[in-house]
Length: 202
Ligand SMILES: [Zn+2]
Image (cartoon, rainbow, N blue to C red):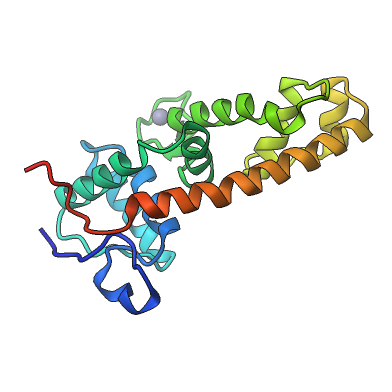
């Protein structure tokens, strides 16, 4: 196994001895790495990650899977809302699919992402407590925040049967809640991933 002193660098000076340059690249890697049995899609994924300047230096697919497993295990202890936020932010919404069936769009949706989104939509009700809140509206707002939808707030309000101003106000509250949740999620993930990359399971 390649020797890394850390998963993420404790400071900029330690970047060389860590497996990833940043917490974001560690999360993108681990959350995009779920197909153990499909080295092709894994290799493609690695190439994309490398293209973004976050190339992890692993020697084999087994090493990559092991590192992804370590990161996933560490963050699995996080608060559920904060964990869901990281999945929505850093996991792919879909994986390339090579099944070649006529009905296939070439993409297979990532169920983990979809589940995390619905957790976040459910939890986002606290951001608009005291207001009459519509689940569909919250879902649209969270998806826009996550970059998964471009439907503008006016159209969204109309679709949900909510007044435009109400929708706008709630969007503001929910975005603020999401931004705060993202900061605390990254802080918590940072604690989970700091230190030695080896879990003492042996
Ligand atoms: Zn397919």
